[in-house]
Image 1 (tube, rainbow, N blue to C red):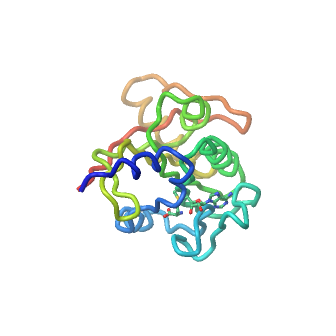
Image 2 (cartoon, protein in one colour):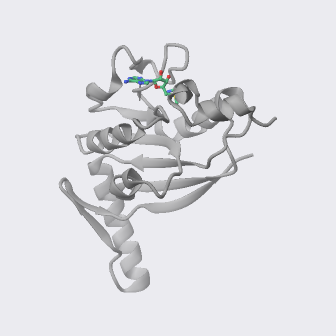
Length: 189
Ligand SMILES: C[S@@+](CC[C@H](N)C(=O)[O-])C[C@H]1O[C@@H](n2cnc3c(N)ncnc32)[C@H](O)[C@@H]1O
């Protein structure tokens, strides 16, 4: 089933806000991460027991200590959510996994997503809210908690150094050193 003109129009406007994550896709990720917080949803689309709706304003809340699943509103405000995801992940024991459009040409992608610990590019299109395939590609961007990132980085540095007899490129951020994100693909059935 393809999208109607008005659905397409809606997807690129702030009216897209209610497009919810396909349950199967979420379940797959949830198996891996065991999410504890959905910071942007409605009561009906909440993916975790702890959640924030528009009324709570997830952007102004603390996400510290949570493993967060974030599928943010896709309007212009998306950049604020990505920035928030990155900043919250710099707090102790806080991991933020973002499901976002793979808009690799945007400033926020380069400023924040390139500091992620991992980027998974989704092959095929997701069917948000039980509708037809989305007209844009999606990605899962993982801002792992610093403790986890540090451990992973040490392991990767050793592996890479062993393989290449050199160290991989690193990104220096205000909160410390992050190795460039690993890239992988997720197959969509
Ligand atoms: C793309 S939907 C994702 C819904 C759900 N989290 C999911 O994955 O299925 C984005 C959601 O963010 C909500 N939202 C918009 N602004 C918000 C805010 N400031 N705080 C919390 N939620 C907000 C919208 O109402 C919408 O339900």
